[in-house]
Length: 156
Image 1 (cartoon, rainbow, N blue to C red):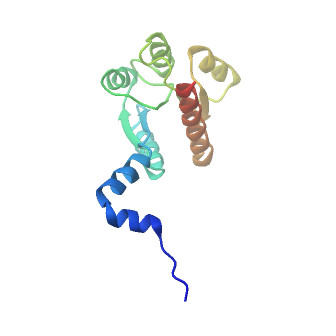
Image 2: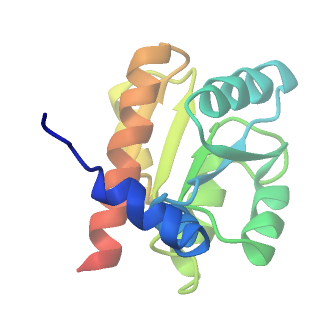
């Protein structure tokens, strides 16, 4: 007769509170994403995509509202439309890059603008990525890639 012992399970039985604390500590915190779009349909569509992937999402209807959100909370990524009334995406990106406390936040443009000139301008004002609305898989890949780059930038 052979008896197999699960040492991990025995340790958990001996000190369940400690094991629970270690399990919670090992889980990564949810990434927080700020989604900015003046069109409610797209705001909610993007929110749904991101929440389905496990992200915590806050939305804003324009650049000014996005800046207010950035002033009171930390975000791992900002996804922004370009064409919005008031503070548009161009100005939002420039504003974020000009503020040292939020300047390193990754920025993804999500827009209907598809010209090479718009892509170049996005890079110039500080966007890290650029996606045309809305291919879900490409969007998900862009979000994942920018979050990974943001993590790498914070650890170096």
